[in-house]
Image (cartoon, each protein chain N blue to C red):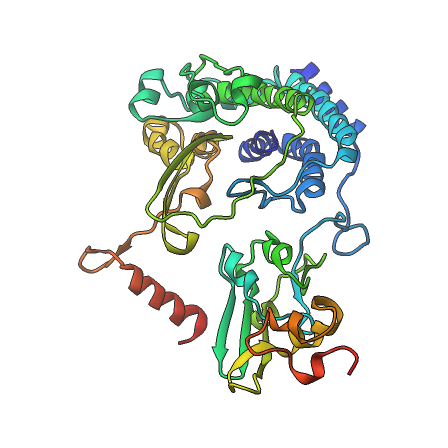
Length: 288
Length: 164
């Protein structure tokens, strides 16, 4: 919910429509305050532990939470209503950055980007996890395949997210929030989980190691997959449409950063071993 | 087009300025449960190492060096999860409300503390920190040697018993 509002603001900023940036972020701010009240931080919530979550939603916050939801819902609808017929905005978004359903499937794009091209993939429905089986989740699909459709998909998903939070609050069972795990975690076990993040499916893969620590942990963030569609999306477009084309996928570069060391003279790619990386780190940060 | 702009203007004018003049004015406050920069109370620490064990970014390090246990907190890697404060048995670590941690001096984000380990009078090895022994009379035991003996290798040190 807050991620989609954040994106709406950034998308507006990219195309020079800063009013929507200011307003979308203003609408989003109470959500961040709630995050801080419940978890202790706006971002990096630090909620998940092996076996459950660390903090429950305090009972005295329930009313405030519902009020914030009502306000965000009302104001989001206002904004959608206001920008829906804005011709300047539509001129920058409609029929720009088109990705056909065939291209989406060929490049395996995910999340709102895929759903805006009529490919209704959503892991909350396709392979439900957590409580999504009981709560249900409507997959928002638009057939425009352009940036405007991505705006619409995200805005409808924001409203759907508010609906899900309301239902989740109403049907929340009162049970322990974390399992009591006392035994060490056996090494050599494999875990794989897929979750629908705001930008699409995110996969985490883990192999457990000695001392209850992970031996290998690999995250595949949705932006990595979505970026593959950029070349075909911006091919033949104006240069000025490239930023919003890229921005329409809600790219998170910190999630997807991959590094390759190339020797400029010879063009050779170098692969670092774990030992070399540790040594590099120690030299850089500990002065050893 | 005009209608749309009017609607946008209405949203803007019905919500006037919401930003704060930070950092030039008051108002930048954080909530009660906010987790900011961590603080260590060396007086309370017993050197158990629980914090180093749970820290996800491994910024807490322990070095055993004879009579001393040296602890390092390299806070530029901190993700403010607060697990260290949660597991600390002596509540020596607290998450303060400090959020203005930007600095151009890296040592501002570095805490080092040394704990002196007491030597067992009988076998001559280091076994526990001063802080932990100080606390024995007030916390861990009721009276007599046997209760302390259960948690220490060779019984309680002489000064540590109540009533003496």
